[in-house]
Image (cartoon, rainbow, N blue to C red; front, side, top):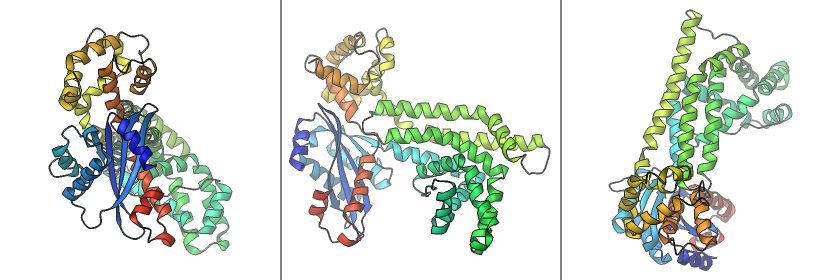
Amino acid sequence: MTDSMKEELRKAPFVAVMLDETTDISNVAQMSYVLRYVTDDGIKERFFKYEDVTEDKRAEAIATRLLEFLRESGCIDKVVAQCYDGAAVMASGLNGVQAKVKETIPQALFIHCYAHILNLVLSKGASKIRECKVFFSHLSGLATFFSRSAKRTKLLDDICQHRLPRAAPTRWCFHSRLVCTVAEKTRELREVFEHIVDHHTEFDDETVHCSDGYITLLTSFDFSFWLKTFHAIFSYSDVVFEILQNKGFDMQFCLARVDQLQRQIEQEKGNFDSVYDETQALVGPPRGRGAQGDVRARYRELHCSVIDSLLTQISNRFSDHKKLEFLALLYPQQFGHYCNYFPTAALNSLMESYGGYFDQPRLHTELAVMYGMSDILGKSSADIHQFLLKKGLSESMKQVYTLSCIILTIPVSTASVERSFSALKRIKSYSRSTTGQVRLSDLA
């Protein structure tokens, strides 16, 4: 299998490297190596090996190991991108792994894993506001209440026929699943808690006490208002999470989805009145001092501050679009416009990052020809790549073919590395905790 992957690597025009580290059952720090490249069959993301990095986790040591691995694999000259999470040791532009790798491979563009960024956007954006923090703590308590008892879980299965996902502090998509589940099953959850209170002799004091509290919570205006607000936001963000973790989509498509998410969240500002009125019709008016208009104005202000906080986080954390301006060269919706107005700024951006791979006048000519081709109008980078291969144009339009290969090679997230950690847990288990490094990588 390794020989087969190395043969794929030998034929691939460009390579991107993805790294991440986790601790296994034996408390050993395992670094997972995944390479992304384009073949005639499409995009491949291949796991190559785990490496024990327990002794030295400094940026210099990790970078040295990575460069050694790339030399062994025979692809150090093909590396065009590197993708890690936001840990300082990996992502720092001064002394991080990405900076050390760039000293040897200057064209290795650093991409901060977009799935991690979106996770940070949602967690930081929502937890800044006191009311939101309280809401999510209640929500986590709801999931924990059922997970602590088999009897409670059985009752949930019988009445709700759907279990509540556990919320993880570092995985914000789990919170979104929990929000969506509670929003869709609110009536059934109330039935569960009412059943416990009605049959109080069958349950312990703590269960009855908590159930009584959760009935009050589920019928409170505050909880219902935030549930509706975040259900609307998370229904969009969940779709983008799935897209960012799919290796088949190129960077251009994913960036467009992030921009779309930003617009959709912005539109939620205008939906305050409908959210407020629906909540009021469901559970009654909010309890609070002051006139009804004052209370409504306070909720409007809170609603806007949550939306603004999320939008600010998206703008700040996805701000590295500038270095990826060259992606616009193969943006299918703009081809008609490019026939009249050539994207010179995007071409200059490409020459800054990857000038060594291109003949600029030749690339300019080939792009101008391609923008006028009706066969390519509206096609994505992956479609253009396949079109050039099938029509035998990969040599006659070599510059455009090279451009499509680079754009497809740039990774969006380290989801494939995270999946290798799932495999690690299945292979190196409690009963197989002394598995050696070579055997562990081979089995994986």
